[in-house]
Amino acid sequence: MIRSMTGFGRAEAERNGRSLTAEVRSVNHRFLEVSIRLPRGLQVFENRLRAHMQEKLARGKLNLTVSWKGAGEEGGIPSLDLDRAEQYHQVLQALRNRLGFRDPVTLGHIIQLPDVIVWAEPELPEDEAWDFLVEAVDRAVADLCAMRLQEGEALAADLLGRMTTLRKDLDAVRSRAPFRVEEAKERLRTRVADILKGEAQVDADRLLIEAAIQADRMDCTEEVVRLSSHIEQFESMIRNGGPVGRKLNFLTQEMNREANTIGSKAYDTVIAQEVIQLKEEIEILREQVQNIE
Image 1 (cartoon, rainbow, N blue to C red):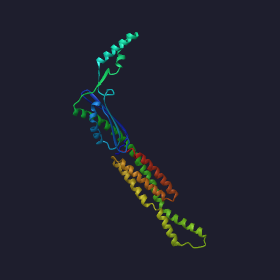
Image 2 (tube, one colour):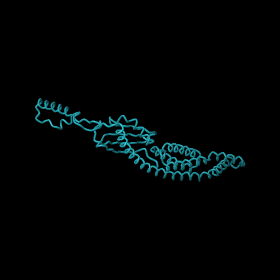
Image 3 (cartoon, rainbow, N blue to C red):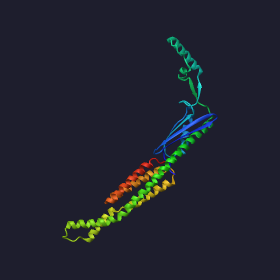
Image 4 (cartoon, one colour):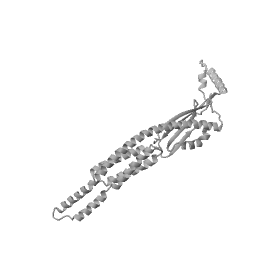
C-alpha cells in the first residue's frame, strides 16, 4: 500500500529507571530531508542516526526530537546545587535586612533563581546509549509509518475512484471521435457549396483530400491510447504500493500532456467538454500525489 508523507510519531524507551522520549514529524518533500535534535550527551550519534532513518523512509521532510523524559531544556536528570542555593539565600537575607522587608525568604524565592536545579545528563557506555536511542527512535518511526500508511490508504481510495472518472471521460472521447470525420466532411461540402452557390460542381476527389487532411488533424487515437495506458499504469502503481510518489507525479504530467493534445485536436464541443473534465481530474491527481512517499 502507498504511504502519505504527512504524519506524527511518538514513543518512549525505558532502561534501568531512565526514560527516553522520541518524537518525529513529517511533511511532504521532493526528497528525504532529516533534521535531528538530540540531548547534548547523545549528539555524537546524529549522523549515524540520520543514516539509520534513511534506511526506513524514502521521502519527506522529517523533524526528530529526542529528550530525556521529565528533563529540562538541556536534558538529563535533575539535581540540586546546594552551595549555590545557600549563596542565594545569604544574598536575599542581606537584601531583606538592608531594605527592611518583613517577609521571610522562602524556598519558592530560591528555587526560581538560575542554576539552583541542575540537569545532569545520564552517562552511558556508547553501545548502550546507541541501542537505547535507536529503540526509542524506531518505535517513534513505526508510529509515524502507521499514521502515514493510514493516510495513504485514504489517498489510495480517493485516487482509485478518480481513475474510474477518468476512464468514463476518456471513453466518451473515444466514442465521439469517429463521428467528427463525417461531420467535418459534411461541413466542408456545405461550405464549398455555399461558396460556389451552386454555379459549379464540387470536385469530389478534392473534397475527399481536404476531408482526409482535416481527419488527420483531428485524429486523437494515439493520444487516447497513451492516456488510457497511463491510467492503467497509475492504477497499478497505487495497488502495488511502495514509494511510488515520484513515478505517479511523472505520470500525471504525461496524462496532462495527452489531455492537452486531445483538446487541441477536438474541434468539437462535446469532446472539448470531456477534455475539460479530464484536465480537472488530472490536476486533482497531481495535487494529491505530491503527498505520496
